[in-house]
Image (tube, rainbow, N blue to C red; front, side):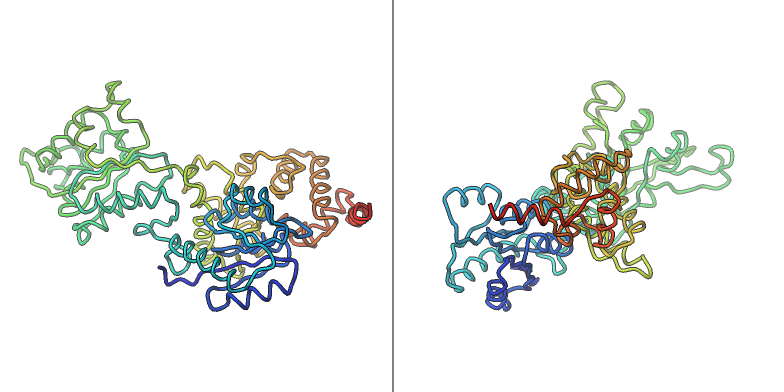
Length: 469
């Protein structure tokens, strides 16, 4: 089990229950508390939480609503529901939504502790790193099962000396994985040399790889080593190898087969001991079929094949990576303290498909850190393309200000007003809770209400009248 102390969030509108469970669990976990759903969402969005113990019946949102939000904000967290209104239907619904267990009130504190200890143990096994960041490979932060399986494969590949081929979309971290292969291999004490084949003009790529002899061409006033010789004894990473022209593919194939290279303009072969790691976002098999990629080179490369998943296929890592990039950027942001994400902002990040993958996510978080004026990044701080990628309805406050922000961008103030009304209706005119869900400061939320002519008091009166009926 991990040495990391797990965090338990206790949510109940009855203060005595919150205090009781905090006392019972204080030796077993770091305990955070919340007395309503909106406060629970703030905690979930702003800090790592491993287990949630939540009451079913609460005035602002019920425990199932908190569970649904938890699945978006903290997909890996274990969730335990407690209720005095237990029914088969409630239990089935909770389990369908991913709850770990549920407790029926009244219960013995010892029995509740036993359930929570099991949930904490399960959570700890999934998050072994001391600060909540799981480095599954050197420099690779992830917690999803997909990436854990990938890490196991990379470790096996690293132990061999086989040529590795990394396939994946742009931005999935192919160079980082290549470096991990090198750092875990017996060659780690020697050089790791990287080259993007698409970034070098085709007529210069050969001399970059193999070097050249003095007088080989105009300007070659002295002999020069190529990257194969620079990486001798270590690893050579060729990114975007699918962009290499066929004539050079033939020379690369020969270098791999003979384990020797010949500099441009030289007749002498030079032995090299290099482990090649190649990568591309292209479909090399289709290129082989079309005749644009050599079949013999494909077979030389396709020894240890690795498919890197796009970020949209490992959504469990989005929240972890977002907080990681936020911490990195916050360290470089002087004079301001940026603590985390508002619930709506985190939901927007997790709902977006990220066509640019991890690279795009990092860029989005860095931009948000630069433009935000608050301690927590709100949805309006996110790039427009992220907001445009979120599909929701104005009547669904679970998406917070995403819909409203898009409405402002399109200049449709009426949609913004309807959204604010829906938000106030859900929270029965309680501005503090609505502002927390929206991810903005209370004063800013009041300004939005005044701007759109939304009367918070009217929603409180309506809620009170409804309760009398």
